Length: 230
Image 1 (tube, rainbow, N blue to C red):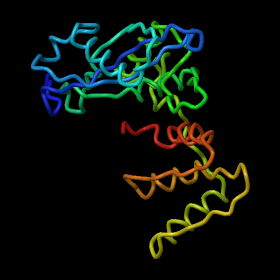
Image 2 (cartoon, rainbow, N blue to C red):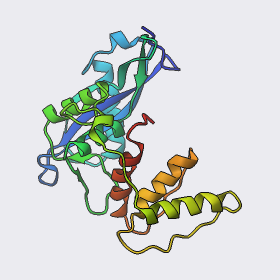
Image 3 (cartoon, rainbow, N blue to C red):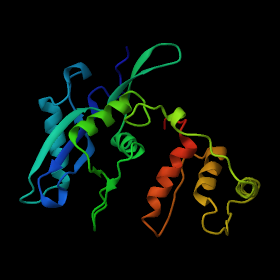
């Protein structure tokens, strides 16, 4: 089995912790940190001293406020074993967003705090967090173990949506500007994501003046790109 992750001395790890306060009661945060070491993956088991140290250093960077009492609940390397089409096994990295996606797909909503950009808090316990991490390693779409491909049905676009997508594709062949003056509930988000998929854009900037729209884009993204790993 290959255990090379590019730089053999730098690994990503996932951590789970909680803040002991009334405002964070019942919540845990799942984040990621980086560890640099000469040790191999086999010598860095979950909750080992080095992983815990790296996690605590990362947590201190954004909780550097006097009086904050935290409990580090779990740490482990953010790696999973993947079997390729030819039967070979390789080790691949994953990030904390993969774990967040599993939780959201399992019905757990992110907890948002006023005047904070943090989106990594969930009203769950450690057991659920560990199940979400395991689901990522098992390449499951949610905690129940359903695969991404089985959990989503292909989107069937309405004629007016297909027309908008086709017109935009033709427009982009001769110009780089297109405006959809469509009414609410038209399905602009899904249609735009389908356009991105068809044209195989690698980088896309989404700009909105309404933060609440962010979740809609994120959820619709997986409806279009559910078959894709990255």
